[in-house]
Length: 211
Ligand SMILES: N[C@@H](CCC(=O)N[C@@H](CS)C(=O)NCC(=O)O)C(=O)O
Image 1 (spheres, rainbow, N blue to C red):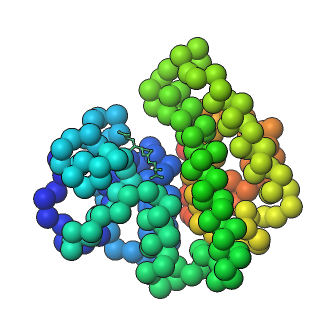
Image 2: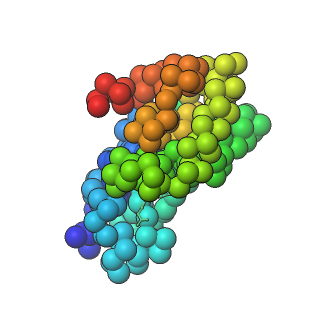
């Protein structure tokens, strides 16, 4: 059930979704006051008329304000939170080129990383499909994405320079769960070290220790 009226910023999200958790981590880091409405993405709730009225794409995360505004897309929500919350500038470089580098990683995450690593993890760990039932292109595509990150993180501690930005938050969301999708971070040691670094910065327990 979706609340009809809300009195403060409300996030609709599923705690098993990296896209949803990245929004939550940023909100928590910035001390944003919000309500969280848990929506299991396998329950069909995102396809109900009530939810589609808020987000025609039928996806979480979704941010909704009491004045009626709603915003979809995890990376857009994170950017908006940083742009409108004191302290948000800590996660977004002031220099326009650095900011563009961060945005470049955000687009890459959604096009080349999430579409392989998050999708394979969803099929394997959430829908419990066997490897035979999963699109065989996802494994090499995800490994290629991890290889790109490995190359960058061999040279820098964070994806953009030497400080945490939204690029790290966006990309750690599913990289930390990559093992659940059948990926071995042991093959990508710089990525593995970076995952622990970013989890520490976010105050998140290491994913493999939770498991
Ligand atoms: N590009 C979107 C992806 C959102 C997305 O894929 N959401 C999934 C959960 S991770 C979802 O809501 N799936 C439910 C559905 O498609 O019905 C974002 O970054 O917010």
